Image (cartoon, rainbow, N blue to C red; front, side, top):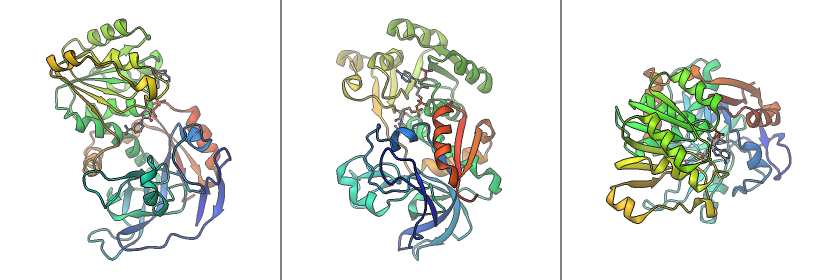
Length: 360
Ligand SMILES: NC(=O)c1ccc[n+]([C@@H]2O[C@H](COP(=O)([O-])OP(=O)(O)OC[C@H]3O[C@@H](n4cnc5c(N)ncnc54)[C@H](OP(=O)(O)O)[C@@H]3O)[C@@H](O)[C@H]2O)c1
């Protein structure tokens, strides 16, 4: 099969012929038709993100394709079905504390290395070997639509946080970092789940206006300036009513006070869900014990999403609650993988998708 291979950090991907994956029990081989390229892929491949990832590797976190072959234990999947390939693989040998990797992307902790070495290659290839439980049928689609369905990878992440926080219809949500890729998707998903109002907090006025225009009056833009108290006042004013939940998607470059500007705006009994990338000193958030306790506030972190979120997201898309046409899409054949990576970095807006098409 043809694949885009990261042979070494800091080098462009090589387009190479690799042996086809070999099917075992508990696995499915998928002909990849479309694979999303994240805006920060270049930083993963040049090593600056310091992801745990063994080279050589076919990168690519998940994708859309058609089942080529199933293992003998598959009960419903059939060759030819259109499917979503989920990159989050949880080890099967520890229910409470499973080692978890993102296939073709990172193994996060040294203990997860065996999982990464076995489910090594990702979706920037004509074929991919995936654990059976990571495959979900999406129903019939036209091959031309496959690229748009890669938006699942973007939408599912905030969906995981919104489910973890128990967002209910009518509730008021703040998305901190709403002008970014995952934050912007969080706005769309929260509206689909019935949020009464979504305060979109970010610094980029143009993107905030764009979000309000696209998603309508339930979205209230809140322009962040970096002054914590002033930013919190802006968020509270934009909400106009008590804030039930804050979903934070600020990146590793952000500072703790940017998180706190939104987090401390939550109401008595509210939920704060942390999904962004702060780390080190910036990630040491200054929550006051007494404030948390007296205000009955829940602070929760969430990485990715539970498996059940995947078919539910497909139902929301199929039901018209999320319209994939809202995404602007640029598609590249596998041979142009490096151009796709550069394009994704330069086009990182919340409604922009960069897609590799191994079928072309
Ligand atoms: N928990 C999970 O499961 C999960 C999954 C995937 C990704 N993530 C994490 O989510 C975070 C966001 O990812 P993304 O792809 O949405 O990133 P992104 O597209 O770069 O968006 C982040 C947004 O944060 C805002 N921002 C605020 N302060 C910033 C600063 N000091 N420097 C740079 N940007 C700043 C920017 O908007 P303004 O300029 O308008 O403020 C930017 O658009 C990343 O850290 C990523 O690792 C988490």
